[in-house]
Structure formats: C-alpha cells, structure tokens
Length: 363
Image (cartoon, rainbow, N blue to C red; front, side, top):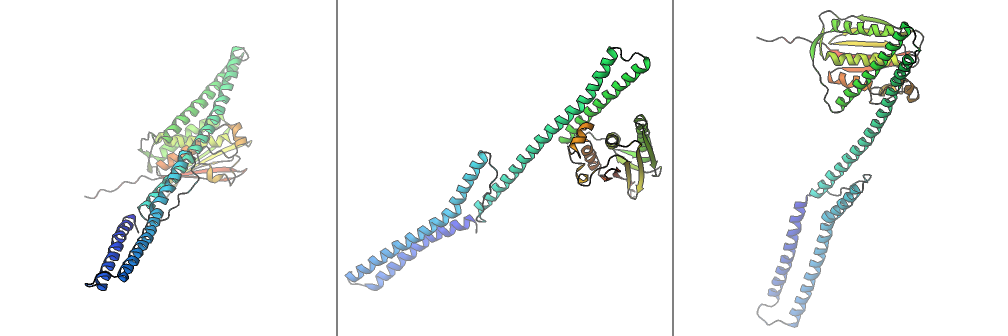
C-alpha cells in the first residue's frame, strides 16, 4: 500500500467515524423521546453515548497517529541518522526498508546511493594505492637507466674508455638506456590515455602476412643483440587482411616480447612466434622459455599493476601496466588475449583478430 492510499484511508476514517457516531446518537435520541421532555434516563443515555464517542475517537486517533508515525516519521528519522553517518564519513551501515510506499522507495534509493558511494570510495582508495605503486615502480625503472647512464658518462669523462672500441661500447650502452627511458615515458603517456579513454586509434585494412613479417623482422634484430634465438612462422595466406591500428598492434607485440625478454632465466634463450589461420580469425602465438608464471598468478597477469613476484620483479623493473595495455588494445580491436604457462618452463601468449571480409553489395 502506498503513502497516498494510506492518507486517503486515514482521512476517510477521521471523517467517517465521527459522522457515523453522531448519526447513531441522533437516531437513538429521536427514537427514545419522540415528543416528551427529556427524562433523567435520556440524559444518562446521552452522556454514556457521548463518553463512548470520545473514547472511540481517542482510540481511533491514537491508532492513526501510531500508523502515521511508523509510516512516515520512523523512516524520516532513519534517513536523518543515515545522513549524519554519511556526513561523518561512515558508510558501514544499512538503511532498513520497512514499507513499499513512496517513503520506502526513498529509503531504497538512499540505500542504493550509500552502496554506490561506498563502492566509489573503495575504488578511490584502490586507485590511490595503485597510483602510489605506479610512482614507486616508475621511480625504480627510471633510476636504473639513469644510474647506468651516469656511470658510463663518468667513465667517458674520466678516460676509462681509452680506446675507440670502448668509447663506442659506452656510447651504445648510453643510447640503449636512453631508449629504455623513452619507452617507459611512452608507456606512461599511453597509460594516461587509457585512463581517460582517449586512445588515438587509426584503423586501416592491414595485410596480415606483410605486416607481421615486417614487425618480426625488426624484433629479430633486437633479439639478436640480446642473444635470444627467434623462430618465426607465418601460415596465413597472402591475401588475408584485418582491420587494425598498425601502431597500436606493434605496441601489443613489443609489450609481449619485451615482457618475455625481461624474465628470461636460462642460458639458451628463445622466442618462437607463430601467425596462424583459425577460421574467421588470425591467431598470433608468442612462446618463450622464460621462468614461467605460477598457476595462481596466471588469471591476473592482465590486471593493471599486477606483478607476479614483487621481490623478483623489483630487480627486473617494470611498471606493471604493460600487459594491461595489451589487454585494453585487444579489447578495443574486438579481439582477445590470453596466456598459458608452466612455471620453470616458459609462457605462451596468444591474441586473435577477426579477419577482414568483403561484404557483397546487392544490386
């Protein structure tokens, strides 16, 4: 029963009961003395009737007051307490909903607002914690190449690199460390765009064979410098294409391969890359023989800031956002990314993209 109905019923009772009682008294009075003058018996009867009317109206009013109090004033008091709790920063309470009328709906809306406000507050706490962790990770990641650059520059200034070969080695190391810093800054810039949903995509039709052949040719040069063996195979037909952003897909590949390089722990290192045709999709597999990922960590590796082993990862660096960027880009491409791994044996990353298909135009 809603509040409007309650008020109509209350108003009706307040009016109808006294009218009924007055009518009954009047009818009784007429029937008892048609023409005679009022007798003591009549007066006694009228007095009793009047007292009965007063008692009945008092009881009716009391019941109505209790009903109205429970229906309106109790919920209002509950909302006042809830408002004071929110004002004081306490969100660990619950607004009890007693009725299904308009005030009950107001209490339900207030409770929903409290729940959402609590969730928002908890998300903010998590976000602030993640930002602090990001700053800590980035500080570590920047400190490592900066320290190396300072050391090699000091070596050059002090004349430690006294031959052209040593000088070239020092300069190349400085250049590589500067590139590491540049990649890190680019990653942070891209991460800020993810947070504000302002990733600048430029989707085009891309030939799968040509694109991935070029990508992995560049990667092969980098892996050769790291003394990592690369095996690459592309089993997709020459005419297969996808709709994708070439630059962002390159970021996906670089992030996955960079992650593999970072956690290589064996004397003979390799990365095997396969591009496969799987029906309506093309599937890219990037397999390494690194240290692998524990089963308990595997479901979370694409979560933002997640690092499988903080104590070991801190020595390797890494902001913890590389794979989350991969996940976001693939999601925006309508694709999918996942991983399989065996701890101590290696990890295989997979991602799929839907093939481009010409839609015939009906004449």
